[in-house]
Length: 166
Ligand code: HEM
Image (cartoon, rainbow, N blue to C red; front, top):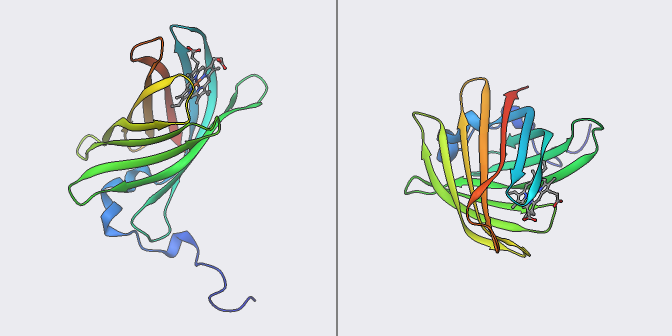
């Protein structure tokens, strides 16, 4: 029995902030597999988990981790924050385990639960010039694609994955 107010209440009892209600479909834990490639690398498969949560504030917290399917060895990870602006546009900031940071801006098609994002800023990257991310959700599935442009390659697919709500 700790002091009242010493810890935040459990997320399950915090009402969703109305500003992020259109993104409610993202909330929860998603798990699945993806496939990576690029013109300059060998293609690969990976396991992945995404977790979208909120604390009653007008922002969704996002964490992602990936692993090698054969061994479970950790691969890329990232985390960030998703918000809806008053004009209906969407803004996402992401920090990657590689040190790269992204500011993503785009739009939500609420009817089709589709989010399209294009990097406004890619920082601390050695090769990456631009990143585009598209997410599509149904009740049970969340799929996404990531495209990137580098110093030597125009915009090409790097990742695609399908995850299920767990
Ligand atoms: C390679 C960026 C996400 C696994 C690369 C390369 C870049 C890059 C610039 C080198 C390409 C080249 O040499 O021409 C990114 C960005 C990501 C991302 C910007 C997110 C937006 C991921 C994820 C995984 C992953 C989630 C694993 C699940 C790999 C692997 C390679 C690679 C295995 C090839 C081997 C290597 O060079 O390390 N990525 N990556 N990447 N990426 Fe990603």
